[in-house]
Length: 200
Figure (cartoon, rainbow, N blue to C red):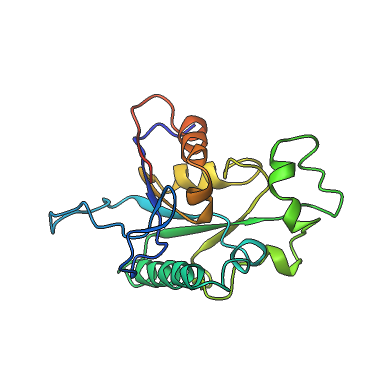
């Protein structure tokens, strides 16, 4: 297991350009920066983990103004990350299963959470990265995700460890839907040293 400190930042871009203070109960639309130090840095060994930015989930929100703002802001974030010199490691997760019988799930609680995706496989349109979110060819990593925990059954931990990543920035709709995603990632991934988790 990974033994470095981990700072998880839940980046929620929904409505950042809006002047309205709330979109619905419990969700702030204006998230102002709490960083005032211009020399702020994530360090030299950080990665961006883009969770579940797939067509089957994102396409459902593009029909509303706030949904389109969220999509635009996430796309701008991804583009800004790619413009870093050099760009940090960016990892995207896609929810899909080995075949239409979804053998990875069994009776796992995640099965009910992904019913809207049906029996998505690697080639299913709903399991593809949403078209507004561009990946860098031959640079970004795209991994299968078949559980709540982003590192279950794939190479996530191996990649982060081999690249000596000590900070992971979490991005995606899963962050808005469940603060437990942050806790699961921290609980499963960080051992042996203190980690800090910042929630939305």
